[in-house]
Image (cartoon, rainbow, N blue to C red; front, top):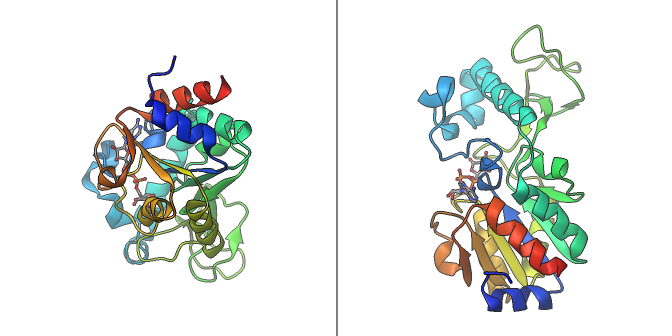
Length: 245
Ligand code: OAD
């Protein structure tokens, strides 16, 4: 027997479309620090918001490149956790399931999720800061940041920085998935960064039941029909176990 709210289970069973939005909290149990947790070690003195901007990159490209190189290395050494794996199982179990993530760590894909809408880009891709050309590979030795093979500009991670637009195709797919679902799962996000933070409200306005999975309250909690105050790695496997029954 599941200890999840029976009304939630009924809404899940009846849903034709389920949409999930994840944030850094879903990767916390893999050892990847969230954005608004205290940073550790070398990076403790910096706020992520002060590093993830074009002006920070213009001011000190080496610092910003190195911060992302540190995150990339950390993520490569991390393993997907039961929360990531449960979301990959949900994709298989439900005919209408869409996964949207704000994360740039690729852990959903490594857990087996096949279709992931990446709103904020990916740490595994880099592009030129000047001409925008993607760089399929870059040398680990040499100048930091490495240079673009096409125009000689500096390479930067292909992630969305504060003040930059989200990839339009990803954003419109996310918007549609919010509008057309009957259950919207909001997992491990502080709900502070737009436009992703507006997706749960949009889903609710279109009639979806909103479910928050987060050990801490957030500004989204007041909107939620169901709140599971638990780590994603504990709550999500219960949902998949129920749906597999
Ligand atoms: P935050 O760091 O703002 O929030 C992480 C959330 O995860 C918090 O609400 C935590 O309570 C929650 N959390 C922690 N451990 C958890 C667990 N085990 N299970 C479930 N939840 C847990 O991260 P995001 O909301 O993802 O954007 O941040 C949004 C965006 O702000 C990021 O994508 C990034 C950042 O600046 C850009 O870089 C553009």
